[in-house]
Image (cartoon, rainbow, N blue to C red; front, side, top):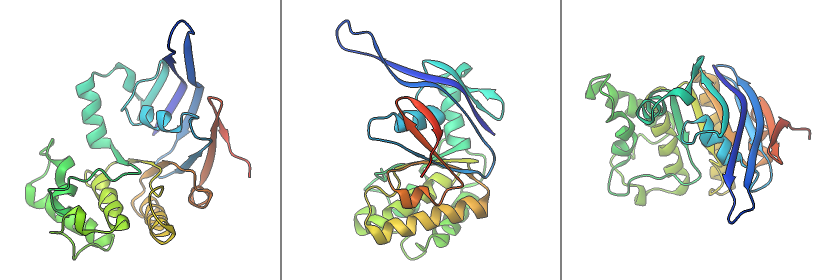
Length: 227
């Protein structure tokens, strides 16, 4: 489903010191329904790699293939459509709109595309919110929720357009142990029950161990992690 082919990413360094190569010739294949954790030291480029996979950033060289389609050849508008239809994003900070209700926040990604009726989309949103235990909080605003509840809303928002690929950047990083465990369990359940491929970046060894494959990014290189 997803293939990275010799992905490299460099940034210009200040002055005349050349460029800083963050990612070096990374190749990777992800199948439908697979779960992968990417671990590594701070500043190793994990979030950069996730942003390239999710078409939020472009590599300096190499290809990102989604179902065989080379994303590097697409316009910004085409990439935006891919992100909205095919990929769900979960970040460490939930980025919910404070003025909107839980239900309204979940529906935000559906506003760009009208592939289904409003009633169908709302029904799906309510079903997902029930699935994550938030059926009694549909009309609450983010400020009225706990950190764990807000992150569950963010998970549902990422799923609302039925993506085949779910990307999570430190999804439990701002949560306490109990809420972190709950989000970990939820992501594992979603990966298994909905056959959505899951790629997450984490510093949590406990969360990483729940994934089918663990990779380590260090010094720009990606490889299988050895405990």
